[in-house]
Amino acid sequence: MILLNVFVDRFNEGGPFLMSLILICLLGAFAFLAMGFINLKKNAKQSEKMRNMASDVSILGLVFGVLGSVIGLIGAFDSIQDINDGNSVMMASGFKVAFLTAVFGAITFILPRIGILVLHGLQKD
Image (cartoon, rainbow, N blue to C red; front, side):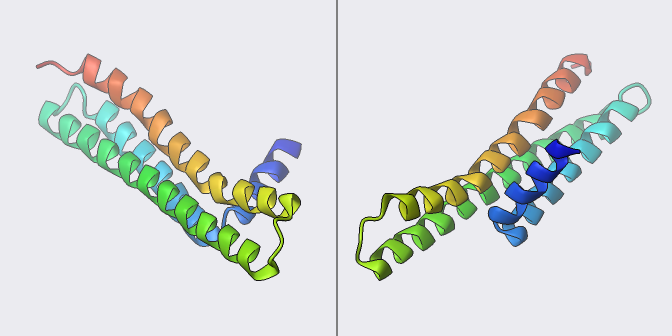
């Protein structure tokens, strides 16, 4: 339960809009992977198509993460510029929020990538 609260807090700190897009990509990639595994024996062409879709969606999640990171960094630098003070606490807070989307985007890329590799290994050429 505590882990879920930490996840929800980090999700909100990273910006609900972009974090939601990344989460949709993660869920979509897993859904495509599941369909790829289901069709592995029945329809090899469909399985390969689902693997490719999972790959594309996971990359999209990574790109959303990088975009969120850049937007967060711009916001952090704006706040530093506005206060005309190099307050390290404010700067650290901005950087933390900026990189939350990048971390979630990387997770969205890495986890499905493991499934993609397994599916690819099971598919017959």
